[in-house]
Image 1: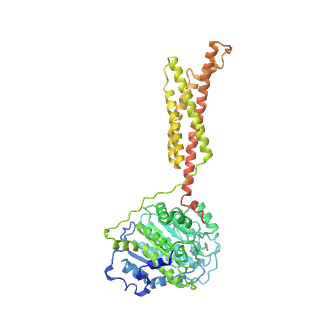
Image 2: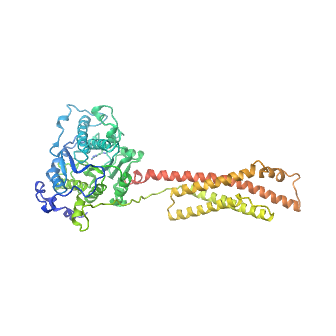
Image 3: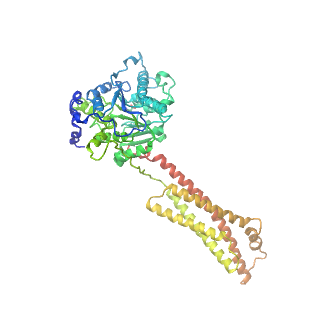
Amino acid sequence: MSPSRLSNFPADNSVPASNSGASTPRFFGKLNASMIESKFLSHPEDLGVVAVGFSGGQGKPGVDAAPTALIESGLLDQLRDELGYNLHGHGAVHSYADLAPAQDPPHRGMKNPRAVSAVTRQIADQVYAQAREGRLVLTLGGDHSVAIGTIAGSARAVRERLGGREMAVIWVDAHADINTPETSGSGNIHGMPVSFLTGLAREEKEEFFGWLKDEHRISLKKLVYIGLRDVDAGEKRILRENGIKAFSMFDIDRHGIGRVMDMALAHIGSDTPIHLSFDVDALDPMWAPSTGTPVRGGLTLREGDYICEVVHQTGSLVAVDLVEVNPRLAPEIEMGAHETVRAGCSLVRCALGESLFTAAMASTVTSGSLVYERRVVERVHKYHWPAVQLNVWILIMLVASCLIIGVFSTFIQIQQVLLLPIPWYFPYYITVSALTVSFILLLLWLIFQRRLLPSIVMIGGFILFVLWMVGLIVTSIQLWGPEGSVSSNCSLFVFGADPLPTGQNLETLAWLQQRGICQSWQAVFAFGLVGAIFLLWIMVMAYQVFADDARDVGSWGLMSGV
Ligand SMILES: NC(=[NH2+])NCCC[C@H](N)C(=O)O
């Protein structure tokens, strides 16, 4: 993070706001909004802009001045002149002063509940009105409570336009903002929007977010966090209990932003519209100091830009929020507000396709139909097999298989010596047992390679279980079947022989041999039964290992750093 990185900015961004449009080299002309084909927008070249000058979701004044600061720094001009969007609804920064209630005492501990509810309701309508037209919607906040409105509005429009389809949300933030009124320590609603949007927090009364209906809500399964590093205890519990996909700064350090985004987008899938809600405090205060709740150890500006770029490249983007820029804060940091606004502009331009514009201009080979394939995602699984149980299973199955092989090989020999035919199930059971031994060897090899996949174990276990059951049933029929059953012969002639032959003579030897055969039958049955049960057990074990993984990967399980 050398200061020289600052010089990476396009030159036009450092010129004072209002001339930035004029400073654009003329030959750029007006290009198509984006080189990426939009999957869900009918008018991707149209950008609905909602500028929200609202700060009631938290206590620090100034965040309501952000839209004006962003616009004055030339953001909208750049979107129109350089990225080629047709802007809609960008005429005014809304202050929602008319919605301020005369009195607004706390409700369930929430501060300014009536004001935030009324304003977000109005924002929902504004965003919906733009999104309904099949436009991309950009909301400039405001504090993060405004996302109650933006997401409610775009979720509703997506459902309506795309036949009830659900929308995913990528929430880039240092905070999870998923407190319920009851878990919140501050009472600030900018720490609660996600709980209202997912239905974790609910209210009947219209004036306290009772206007949020199912059509406005998003599923907890379609929510992905990126950049978390300051999560309240109650929020951690909510994330864990609901298995919410969350990539903390720890995950970004470990895997890198590239892999984290691959995993995040793989979770969402390529067939789901995406709403990107970007809180500028996800960036490290080094890049964005002027924000209400800065937390050190955040994203670099480049990482933030990258997130926006790859989300744009999916072609699934339907709406973008940029919130929590507060130009009045961090006056002690030289150019702090300017830098924060600049960072915000950079994020928005990336989300709206700037890098592609640059890439296409710079490339000598790409044409207008530049398409970025999303890389095939390789998910990292960490399966936790119960070591002791697995070892016991392997040992017992080995013993059972070897015993059955031994017994039936002996039986075959005996039949041969006695010149009797060999029944089919002798070689059958030997084959099944040999297969079991091979399966165990395969498992051992996979364990050694650290690639023991539950699916392999489940499929193998199931096939062997079926084969093994056939053997077990045939043995039972031989033992207790209707005619000349082994069991009754044994108890009658062998165990029940009266008097028991004794002494060193052929009769005694023959009796001993017969007793051995009878006992072998019993052992085969016993181990056949044990084997079948153990094969069931390994399938259950594999299923549990699989289920544990599904709960862990990429969700709170990876977030040991928070
Ligand atoms: N959007 C934000 N900056 N949120 C900060 C939330 C901080 C804290 N978790 C709270 O509930 O108050």
